[in-house]
Image 1 (cartoon, rainbow, N blue to C red):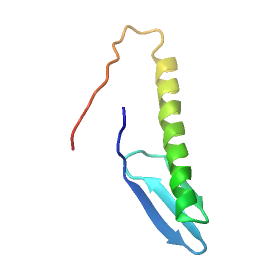
Image 2: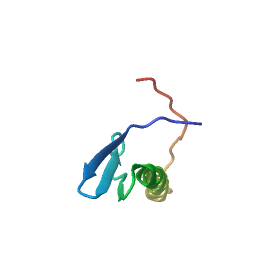
Image 3: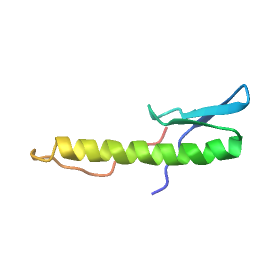
Length: 73
């Protein structure tokens, strides 16, 4: 399933810094905007993967239900 997120880019001296607007902690920096975009994709994937692992570990002993949730904004 493809999801869309908002990448925010800012030039800071000789570097570009950026973050994903919707996901706290998904940020990076790079010397080019193209490299930054790739870094942000990787950071976003790592944050989502880490959040899932933490959540599953913390709820492993509980009776819970997981299901996909789709929203339109």
